[in-house]
Length: 126
Image (tube, rainbow, N blue to C red; front, side, top):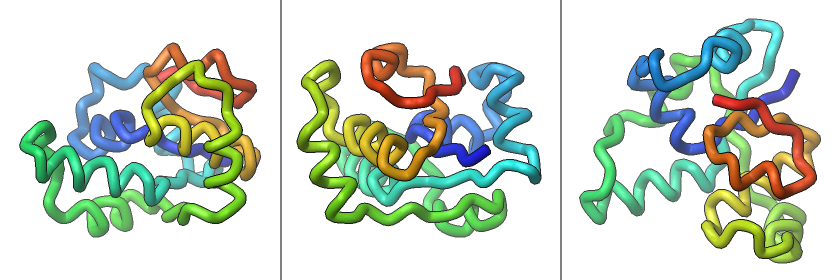
């Protein structure tokens, strides 16, 4: 399975915040059989919120992701067009990009955000 982590799931996982992740999600992320991706939009969101003082995130995010064997997912023109064409079920631009990337790339989005179920995208509850 190919998984795309929502930003909060990435942060919970890196913080080893096991109580916040449902066991199925943690097992799927930990499984060597699955490919786990992190979008550039999540890194951007973390950087913005850290700068605004709204988020305490690891300063060595890239190293932490590499140590966890996560792969980077860049944002492409196709992703941007797909995000712009999504229905307005959710107004968070970061989440809309994650949905678009999951749709375009055929990924399962691992999230705790129930609003994302309004979109035609494979989800795994975190």
